[in-house]
Length: 464
Image (cartoon, rainbow, N blue to C red; front, top):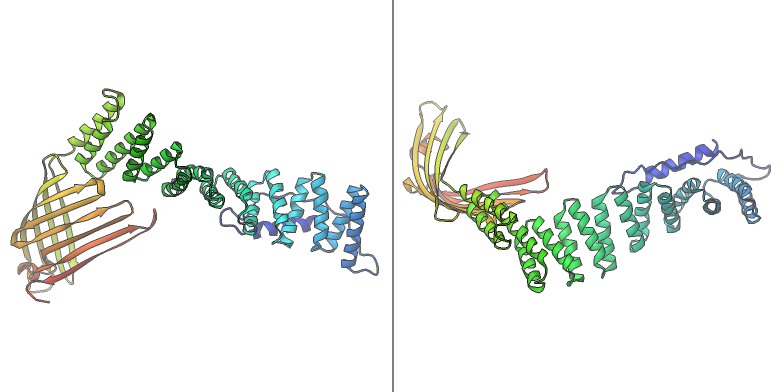
């Protein structure tokens, strides 16, 4: 096997063996050296002895200024003893001095493999890979080096820059946050990290680092305003409003703060609108109107939003159908509901018509049906993502409680008195129960959620 083939194998092994949680494990291709001369072991010498002799000659020739001859002897030494660290080191130094970057990358890759705990080799290799336009390989080497030098601020900044070149926005943000943690008293890495987190769609991460930056530089109006923007983007409207109101009080000359507060109120209005809190939405739009010049374009746009929200607050009719099967029994339920708004609020009066039937495949039992009328109230607290409901019906039935519909968690709890309609006997004899029912659903990430519901009931007539 000649030396060209051997070095190709070494580079491949290094590339595939560089474990990293961020980048693909195959870095940019490294060039291979020119073929080495044929190596013959002198009679009476072992390969190790011959390697040491070639190493000695290479060092001496380099001292005398015979660079090319020195390279030949050092490559002989490496061919004779592929694990001879000093030969690689001497050859690497010559290649650096002669600016033979391509071949130097191969040599220092091998040195980093032979002595993985020696930071010097990885430092040189990372610089060479960066110079030779191998950003992915340089980032992999930098991550390995960071394990050896976990508090090296210069290295963290270089890695952050390499992540940016590779288009790894989130990893770049994380590295800058780590740099800020190590520096301890410099808000800039946190500020830079926040922008990248927002670009990656991670508003909560941006809030975390902006809060750190703002704590380090509380008089920096730009940082505080950016933190308010992040709160708004994450729909933390109360915190955004509180911060901007205080900033306005401390900086009355800043017109931009008023514009940001308008954005908060519009955001709250849009959120309420998405929750069908029509009057809550209109109220927020009116607050935004109070901060902009009357008859201006923004004022007119907000009035259009107000008119839209108020126009959607009107009586409406809805219904639903339910089908169930239980041990040979088949139930059907049809519910019709009319909701009528009360006063200038998101409170609705409701009229219900609830029709239930149960049939069975069991012979000799027959079927049953019942109809119930109900009256109730529903209040939509759009500002807190909650809906409170209560109704009372014929036969003494009732249900009262509320639900929360947050962005990641939904849940509800109700006290209920109702009729079991699993079987013709239960519905026909109006087998009533009283208890608590509820549900909870959670979104783990954008693809996975988990949830469940419960019913704890006591039958009023004491039957099983």
